[in-house]
Image 1 (cartoon, rainbow, N blue to C red):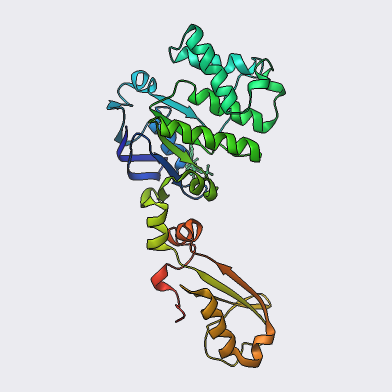
Image 2 (image 1 turned 135 degrees about the vertical axis):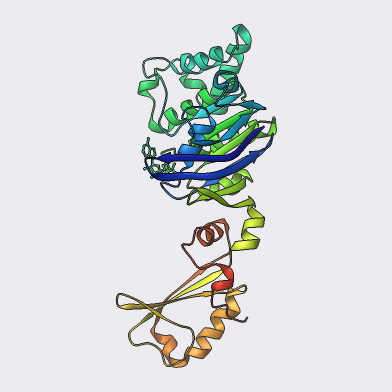
Length: 310
Ligand SMILES: Nc1ncnc2c1ncn2[C@@H]1O[C@H](COP(=O)(O)OP(=O)(O)OP(=O)(O)O)[C@@H](O)[C@H]1O
């Protein structure tokens, strides 16, 4: 449904996208992850035909977005990071405007506007001017405008920033519902738990390329490991392992451990009386977060860690 091949984008002499390939199938939610400045918004904007690329192609429903942006855009919905609502129009008029732009008319348009408002918990605000909505309600409205025509391909760029729990739940519910009805969805976020809740597939954008992709389970299996972070006060303990690094007044040691419980017991036994000077033990289970951090180099990868036999 969405096919991105060899996409390149430079700002001045800085290559932000350096050959990005991505495919998103009908019914698939693709979580696009990357650090601040990795190029996610740039990628989404080019894919949606809002910015031009320096190389590569984007096809939506088989249509080349750069060559036929108007035609391709009839198959898309986009909710950019910046809110794009019309403040002086009511909630109903905002959603309705986008329904009409997508060719929905009369009773069908009216029914869909009400359905979207209901899905996003805005049904009792239909007659309210957008400018008086709360931040979270504005965010929901902004999402509603992007999905009203049930687009084949939907781009949501950090849709839950500033949204409260209720707004977040509503937005995730709408994403699930659209994917179930066959939309291909690109979802950028820094909230990894949302991607877990959506059962999304993941693509990690790093240094201009997609450096890892797959289901959450695949990424966790491949890159993540449980780890134990130990903090120690004062002089380094007598035991030769584990290795410690200074962090100000504190010594810290990070251990990869498939079975953290026995690993902690082993370390405590080796430390002997020095164990009394431990002042922190943090256990991190293998997760999408630890996989992501390993992939983007913020934490050693599984094989590079000092694995404690358990
Ligand atoms: N119009 C522009 N002109 C010049 N540089 C730009 C422009 N837009 C973005 N950039 C730069 O390109 C890089 C990628 O920006 P982009 O907004 O695509 O990243 P992002 O992954 O969406 O970041 P965030 O997670 O912070 O939203 C950044 O270094 C940014 O400063």
